[in-house]
Structures are given as C-alpha cells and as structure tokens.
Image (cartoon, rainbow, N blue to C red):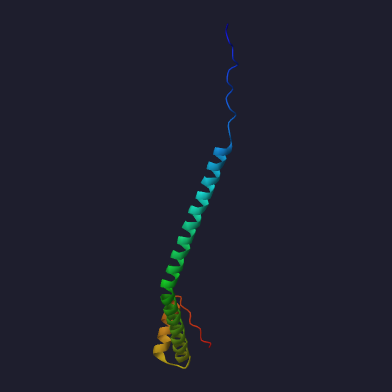
Length: 101
C-alpha cells in the first residue's frame, strides 16, 4: 500500500516583507535628505552672517569712492588742473565718474 500524498504546495509569496522594507528604505532616505538639507541651510546662514560685515564695509567704501569721484569731477569742471588730469586718466582707463548728486 502506497500512500501517495499530494505534494505540498509552496506557500504563496507574501508581499508584506518587501513592502515593509521598501517603505523603511524610502523613509530612511527622506530622513537622511531632510537632515542633510537642514545642516546645509545652517551652514549657508552662518556663511552669510560671516560675510555681512564685509558687505557693509564694501558698501560704505563704494559710497565714499563715489562721493570722492563726484567731488574730483566737480573740481575738474571748475578748472582745477590736477583734478582734470585725474578725471582724464580715469576716462582713459574706462572709469566714468558721475557728476550729478
């Protein structure tokens, strides 16, 4: 007597484990990207703050040089020979001076 039992059928593959792994991987990637972007934003804010004083100093210097150039141009217009030489030299170098206020 042979007992022929039907072969055991393989259980159907479950999608539960791959789906959980996929969700965890996506969540981990999003968490990593969020942390990296936050750190980068903080670094950029620090860099901007460290440059703020230099930017203000540069703006002050630009305003001072603009005022100085305007006054030299006014002196040149009024007939000062040294001022005319400076203005002519600056024009030759391609630097224009605003004569208005």
